[in-house]
Length: 249
View 1: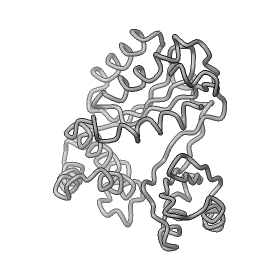
View 2 (view 1 turned 120 degrees about the vertical axis):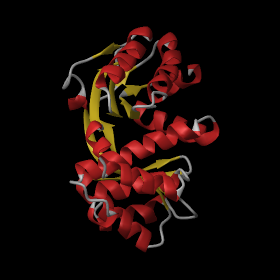
View 3 (view 1 turned 60 degrees about the horizontal axis):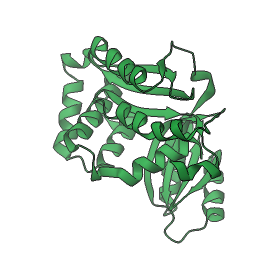
């Protein structure tokens, strides 16, 4: 199974069961602050698509309304200038490619933390551009089936401007260009489709096969350690584990 879909599935299964609520809200608040900053200070989600996505993600995580409002207020203050987005690229154990999206107010803290995890888990932190060409940015919409078939959702999504549809356990994933994410999401909702999440993601366009059982066992702990960092927002990987090797995970 590819790292893209495998890691997404694992994260959903773990969900809030073992997530530190405060840490999750901190990550969501940082995403809201950055969205306001990158959106030119626009604090109205109707005029700032990135902010709307960030707020939707916060609501999906049951983040209190006052926390969301507080993050927007902070984004309009002086401290917002200290928050910046940093993209890290590297190679995980076994050589698969990794991209990390982080939001930080102190790169001198974040970079060593990330590098340490790579070094201690058989990976290596790369330079900008070392693996980004192996991924493409897409809009990703997760839909609850609710009795609807893949074909039915595919037709609705295609008419709305989607590029691809994928069935993943109890959900159906719709992929769009980044520019059409909001448009497709809104069209599906208007058609009565239950949208669970809508976000920008990075899909691998090439994969690195991993067959060594010892390496396979290292993958999930490595990814979890990266995501456990307060400054890290998302982690993407392009490892590919064959069906015959999945039992060793």
